[in-house]
Length: 88
Image 1 (spheres, one colour):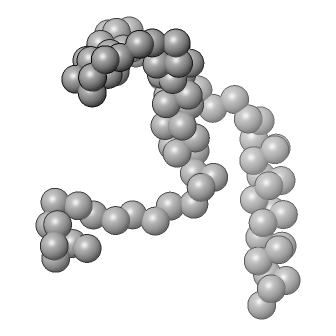
Image 2 (image 1 turned 180 degrees about the vertical axis):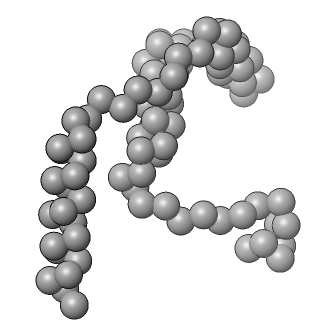
C-alpha cells in the first residue's frame, strides 16, 4: 500500500486501545449533537457543518480523563496475561 500511496501509513492497533475509544466518542458526540437531525443539501454543506462543530469543540478543549480505577485496569491486564500464557 505504501508503494502506491507513500503518504499513507497503515497502523494496526487493538480495538480496545484507549485512544481509539476517545476517537469513537468524538464521532458519537459529533453525530448526536450535530449530524443526526441536520439537513444537508450537499457534501459541501455537510463538510462545513463538521468543520464548524470541530472549530467550536476545539475552541474550548477539555483533557481526556481516564476514569477507570487502577485496580480494574490491573485486574484486566492480569486476566489477559493468564489467558495468553494458557494458550502457549
